[in-house]
Amino acid sequence: MLLLSYSTLGEEEYIKGKVLQIERVFAPEEGEEEIKEIKQLRVRILSGSLKGRVVPVDFQVFTEEAYNITIKEGDSVVIYYESINEYENFTIIETDKRNYIFYLVGIFVAFTLIFARNKGVRGIIALLVVIVTIYGFFIPFIINGLSIGPKTFHSPILGSVVTAVISSVVTIFLMTNFNRKGLIAAVGSIGGVVVAGVLSFFFVYKMRLTGYTNTEILNYAVSFSEQVKNIDFREIISAGVIIGSMGAVMDVGMSISSALNEIHEKKPDISAKELFISGMNIGSDVIGTMVNTLVLAYIGSGLASNLLLTLQKDQYPMIRIFNFESIVVDILRAFCGSIGILVAVPLTSYVGARLYAKRSSNQ
Image 1 (cartoon, rainbow, N blue to C red):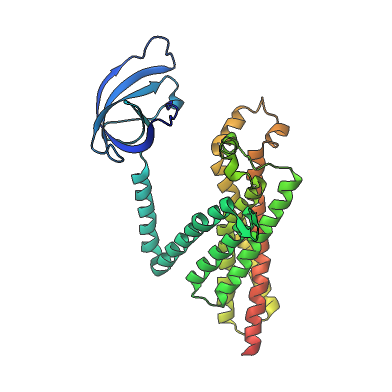
Image 2 (cartoon, helix red, strand yellow):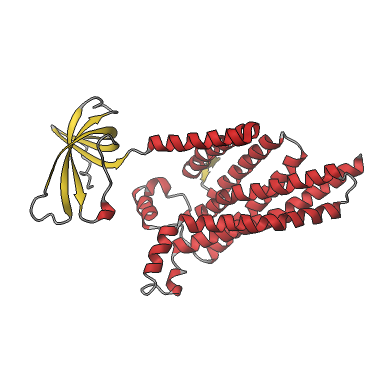
């Protein structure tokens, strides 16, 4: 759907509506071959300044199916409303998916509480803290920066490291009740994500990446040039590696730390060397699945792009494909994050071995 251009003499807003009825279907005017048909709908406005009104809305169905959205009677829809002088325009731009998002989150919370009980409650609290940290601190920090004297610094990497530290510490200690097991897991996790971030930062500059991985980001950067002029989009790639690998690295750190704690509880006199070797053996089993988790996650997120590139493999040889910035960035994220997991294994094992062995020697 094409939206009318915004006029400073009018008003515009996005509002929620409900399709009451499909009144009639008619053919488009001659010369509009791209439009298959037009449906005239009766829609009740459910939000905004026009709440309660029932208005007619013309909904275009295009000949190219990729441009269409399915609208049925009873559907909740998102409407773009524009008013210029006495002229009003209503355009349905999408079905309203918010209710289904709430349902999905509700199912997740219910399953978490059913299967994890008390730990599930803590996990949900930790997740909320992580989300609040990202959207309440990390994103505003990138946009607004940190003012020190007369200068303001915009560093996505610094913001992501602080976010990773806060998220890791809160999550791990909520799950472990602030004990030594949590400290070991936190040190290993933070070390792993920092290494992943540093490594990605090195390769971002070596490969001369720009951070504008697709045309949408580039268009927004141009549109909001004044707001983002101090942000280095290359650093956002490395910040994304740190944030994106944080969960998987925490999982590895917590798994090894918990295992070492159990071993130490069963055999308090175990030496630091034996405990370290045990941690490495446990980590080697965890590494394979967790590395796959990160790589497959990034492959899955870019599945549509991979499909389209495969269909165009005759037009795009390998030398071209592996120099698309979006492809390179996904590879960078997957493998730098995986290296962070690999680093977290010996680091967690070493810290755990030293702390538990020291406690044993003090008993």
